[in-house]
Length: 263
Ligand SMILES: [Zn+2]
Image (cartoon, rainbow, N blue to C red):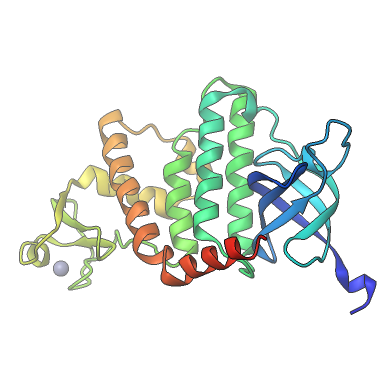
């Protein structure tokens, strides 16, 4: 392998960082072509360091990376988007944290995923833009983000047709199934165990968030009680997807291999 192949450039979003050795830091970053990777920023905790490690959480950075044995090493870093405004707003920071955590949970190494890269950047830009203009955080953004992320990852819940008879769902009391990832009509749902009733106004909001661009979603005011019910359902669904599908034996093996390889 020649020197040219050992060095590469990539854009990256900083998802996590942790201290290692005396002065180094390992960054977990999400990239559009390589998925989620860990990179070593050497010497960045020394007070004299002017290098790579000044990359903050959830900044969009351009990196030059050199191949190495345990972690590839960041040799140059420059900020592309700092999302400076969202950092001045506690709600926006919490929302950005949530976005970074979900991207972290739903991605892997070698996961070429330009659509998810675009979605994550879109969400951070929306938070930054809203924080610049107002005191509020971006309306409905995280609920919309949840549903777009689920669609991109192959876990899209079915809100338009009955999971059993496939008839279009009507504006009436239907049944939601966390385990099956979608809704059953009253006829099919009444014959099954373990379902929960879902009110028509809640289903309507979920459909809207799932099928509309953010520009449309941002303009809609959802009644607080409905928003709470939507949040509750989405949180439980996200948690069940992460638990049952993503924290797979594969995932656990990778984590074990990773921590064994650090010494
Ligand atoms: Zn049905």
